[in-house]
Image 1 (cartoon, rainbow, N blue to C red):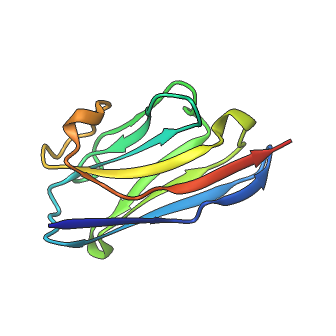
Image 2 (cartoon, rainbow, N blue to C red; image 1 turned 180 degrees about the vertical axis):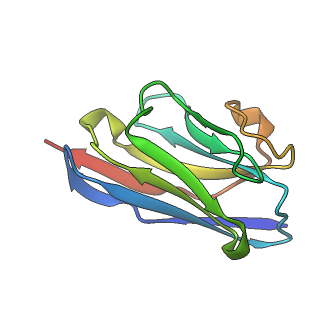
Length: 124
């Protein structure tokens, strides 16, 4: 059993920054690929970013490319999402997820383990 816990969400004005963290515990593996997804009210779950097991591959949604940076610290079983130049459309619940595939998939169905999410609200 793998448990993922997100933290770092909150309220921020447009143009500001936040850093999200996702800590893994339980039967974890360094070989997991890790991803971030988000869901706004009334919207479908949306891919944000992903990173391979050794950080060799990173992927970003077009809407966040150049503004967000994903990273991981395998020694700490933690993945991060640095979010800069935040926009109102970034407002959503952000979820981290782990995939046994080990790569950086954009597809939610490749992820077997999910956290409970952390709220990010961007105001004008």
